[in-house]
Image 1 (spheres, rainbow, N blue to C red):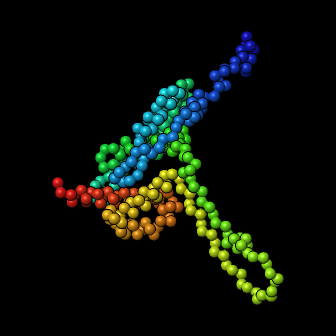
Image 2: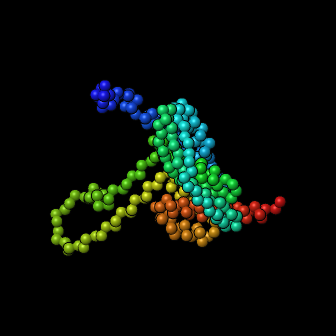
Image 3: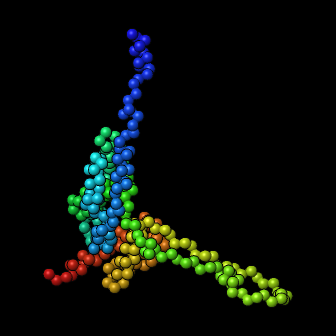
Length: 270
């Protein structure tokens, strides 16, 4: 009896469920296959930029998560809360949250995604904004959600690069005459080609375009100070090369324009 028990312990029965992959690994790719692009369909008129609202994410993802029976829980791992003062003297509450999102499948299997969200508000919405930002970027990156619809081929116009000057000269050169003795010539120094323009991702490009638009507007109504415009012009190369620099100057431009709008409202007679 003991011997039979020992053999049973050494060769346990094969459980088909143990050999099957966790269900979450098939449910997430199934959602990825069906999710469509979520464009930046909302516009912040005061600060001049487009964005995707949290409702846009819910409306697009809820039917797919319900169909594939996947749900999400969240846990705030850390919170940092600071107070900042804008140029109008108003106190802004800045909240940075580290959040853990757990995606569950019907069989109890799950995957974990940790991300950071930041929100700023003058009232009681800073935490809500931070949670919304963390959720949006978690699902966008996990599901690799397209941010724009596929564009028609006519949207992109290829730029034709001019042929090097020495090749054009050789093609247009007349028939050679018998060689004549010539004095030795100094080799011509060729001007190096210009550095290629930096390739920007969609968000970096939008930040740069917003800064450019506000600076153009400021030439008409002085909505941002002249010294800030001069600094942006001087560091434009850094802004187009670094996304972090673009974010910093976009924030400075938005704060300056917000201050200008506040002054305009104060000067407007009731």
